[in-house]
Image 1 (tube, rainbow, N blue to C red):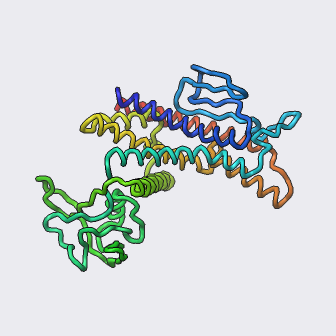
Image 2: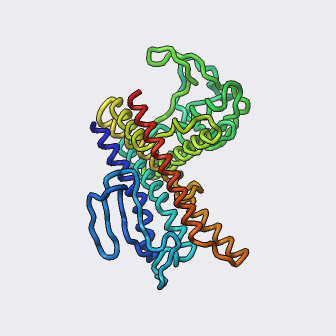
Length: 355
């Protein structure tokens, strides 16, 4: 139950962070904000402060920053502080600000976790399991930092196993850094084999990796690389969805996410480790939200950006303005489709709970 509560609270905070990004950017660029809401559905609490109504709503599955004229509509007397009246670059900044806030939240959370843990595992070889056949000057040595596998960059330690597995069995081109120099091990025969590890016979690559102590510049660099790793995982998942390797039934909504958070926390060795693992997962979700919101799909921030840029290009080439009602229709249709997808995914998540 503890981790379910933590999951719901943190998921709600991610939504609040996203909408706060839009809100702060809008206020900074002098756009009138009519309502700032966390959550959807019936209102639980609201307070009017100045021109803005601040609301807390029942369902923590969304939120919004309602700006004057954000759908392109204008009243009889144009409002110079409406979203529609602002220049293109200001509109783009406001729309990007939500995803930027989520990415920043993920970055700061990862940095906090590495600082709390006192360090992190780096893609630097510490040693080898007994029987590893490729150690030596012509192969790998302790202290070697893995830079890439078959031309694909190693950002963090987790990339090592992912890229080696993706390369499959057989020779690989492995780029390493040794004593400040880059060395390419061409056609290097690094494949998994059986080793004795912690009293068990397991199939591994036979490498062990160094743990680096947390330092301010090191934490910043490693946190950035970890967020890049998260982003790559999101794009890989999207690619698998597009190519049919996974289906809609494999997607998770708020119910599924909270369930995974609860399982992640409850299966940890201690409460401290559980909280750390849950926070790491939340950081992944934050970066996920940042990227998903930038997809060029109507009703998402990326879709609105696409329509704004398309409308500007239309004006520059034809001197004709795109009727705001068409943008509103597209966004409304996209919103309906997203709601339908959310209902389907939530229903699927609930069914998974019973199975």
